[in-house]
Length: 143
Image (cartoon, rainbow, N blue to C red; front, side, top):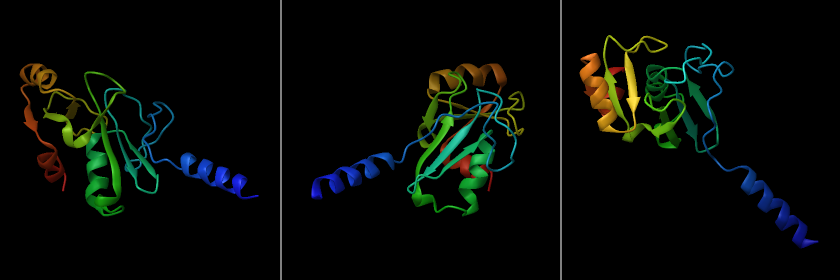
């Protein structure tokens, strides 16, 4: 009688694993602005310790949420952004390299693109005459 209970509890714990979800472009809506995610070079996601997933179409929408207090920052297990150079690929937000330029046509006009590597960001920085922002600068930019 005890063994099935342990198996059921083990299954429940495994099925409640907190993890990111892929962004479904053309289907998912941005939590902040409610627009449908369309451009695979942009997007972001926050996942909480309770497994709640928040999806965003532009980095500024995620940062607005991050700064809003709707969820405590210390309960955000994942803060992810899409790598502009590798569409649909998530990068940890704190590790990404951000480029701000008037030439970047992001969904909500933030003018921000995220990159996994500084090398890739530097290529676009020269082309777009942009400025590099760290995660801390980005979070402050949209306060």
